Image (cartoon, helix red, strand yellow):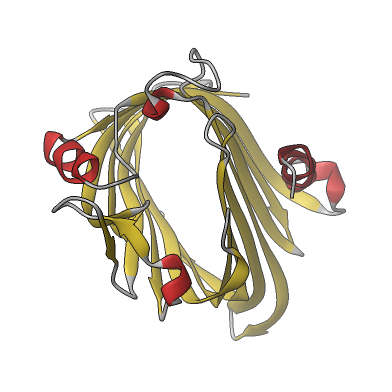
Length: 265
């Protein structure tokens, strides 16, 4: 799937007019700096590929929902000030798109049962590398007071350069949040997490922290824990702890801090 087609699909999901009876929506643009830990850089750069280096990213993010369900998506440009192909490929400009749809099918009491679908796509035009994760399954959501959580479980298909598209086990995950007031200011703590399990050997060749290439575990973890300060209706700033294990092309634990400033409109 070409990047242009992915962007068209993401724009449809991010447009409230795509569905009737829209009840809520949000959208923002942000500037971000991702700072990998020194240990992560040491471990990943020892491998034959997937070495990590700090980078800036620009993001457009949005979501909307109603009685039918909800949709969410973002588009990132990593290393936006760099060329598509740099002498150090870790500095290459990269593109990331994610689109998520949750469609209400029925309810068990007050808890919805949802059809769940998501597509995540990463492209590095400079090296020709691309990977796309496709998940189809079931989801649900729950809220109480200032706390909310949205969960999913689905079959996972992955498309990689030189490998093709194949089943890659299952994926389960959630996104959760809690809003609160402190010092007269508005804050929100959030987390997203994904666990991949029963992954296919086709997708388990990873950079080794001991050097070269190794076979990774059949289970991988991926996520972030965040604290957001809603300075005003228009402006939000945040600090995110980003983590991954047996993911992102490396058979090691990886962690970073992400510093974010958002404009909400």
